[in-house]
Image (cartoon, rainbow, N blue to C red; front, side, top):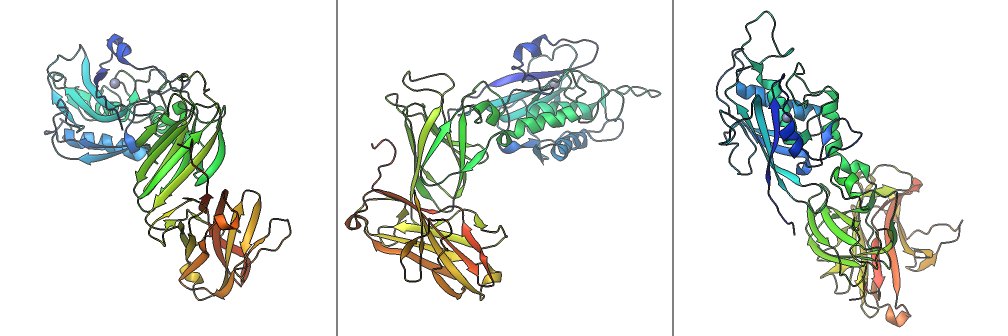
Length: 499
Ligand SMILES: [Zn+2]
C-alpha cells in the first residue's frame, strides 16, 4: 500500500571554521521546528535504528585507526541517545544507492567536487510514509580526503604540538547526527553546529534532538481497542499527526487504538460519522503503516478490511488536514466498529485483577457458530452460538481452593452466571457478585459460557454483549484475576455503513 518515492538529497556540508558558506545548506534545509533549539524536520528511521557499514583502512598519526574512531562515534550515539546503530565491519561504497549506509574517504563527492572548505558530506535517501515526514532508508558519508586528519579529544588545535590535522572522530560524530536525522544547530553548543569547533562530544542539545525525533508516540494518548462498537470523537485536545510523527505540516487530529493479534485473523474496521470525514489506518506499534482507507467521497465514512498475523498493532482514526468533502468536517463524533473472524480462540488481552496484584494467569476465548471451526464477534440471530473461555491459572494458584466467575456486560446491565448456569442481574449497587463454580483450581479451566444459543427464538434480534471470566482463591475472595479484552458478541447488527 505504500507509495515509495525515493529521492536523494545533498544534506550537509561540514565546513571548516573561518569561511561560512551556508547558502547551499540553507537552500536545502527543511523548515526548522520552532522553539526547539535542536533542528529536526521529522525525517527518521523506522524503529529508531540503523545498520551502518564501516571498513576504513589505516591509522591516524595518534596511531588510532580511522575505523575505530567511526565505531566509537557510532557507539557514542547508541549509548547516549534513543537511537541505536548496529555496526557492520564491512566495506560498502557510500556513493552507491544500495540500501546500505556507509562511510568512506574520497577526494571528490561521488564524482562532484567538494565545495570550498567542505570536510564531509552526508546524504540521506527517503521513503514516503502514509503519515508525516518520509522515513530515512539510507544515509551515507563521504569525507574529503584532501584534508589532513588526526584523532584526539579537546580543543580543535593542539597547542604545543605540530598540528597534524583536524580531529576525524568529531567529524564522524557530526555526520552520524545527520544520518540519524538531525540538522544543523546554530544557537546552543552542539556537535551538530555547522562548523567544526572545540566541541568533540555529544552535547545536551544533540541528545534532546534525538529524543524529540524518536519519541513521538509519547505525545499521544494510546487507547486499547475494544472489539464491537464504541462512540468516539476527534476534536481539539486530541493528538495531531504532526505530534505523533514529530514533523511535517499535517496538523489533522488522530486517535490511536492498540490491539494484539495472537493468531492470523481477518479484521474489519469501520468509522462512521455524519460530520467527521474519517480516514482509517493500520500500523504496527513501531509505526510501520500497513493499510490506509480514506473512504468514498459520497459520505464521511471509512471501512478497512485486513488480514493480520500475530503481532501488536495500532488502528488509527484520522481525518484530513485540508477538507476533501464539502459535506464533512475535520473534527466531530464518530462510531467505531471493530470486527474479526479467526480460525482459533483468541487471547483475551492483558491480565488484570480487582485489587491489582500481579499474576501469570492468561485467558483465551471466542464465539463460534460452526462448532469451533472459526471464531468471530458478529452473528445473525439464527446462528447457533457457542461461547467459550479458557483460563490458564497462574501456576502458584493451581491446586488451591478457589472459584470461577462469569460476567456479561450489556449496554445497561451487568449479569453474572450462577451455579445453576443462569445469568442473574447484579446491576444494582450492593448486589453481591455471583460465583459460577467453587472448586480446587486446575491448570486449565474451560468455561462453556453458553452452548447452542440461538438468539432469534428468544426474541433477541439486536444485541451487543461483552463476556469476561475470572477466578480467585477462597483464601482471598476479594481478589479476582480476569482479562482486559472481553469476548465481544454482536447479534444482528450490520457493521459499518451497512454495505
Ligand atoms: Zn553538517
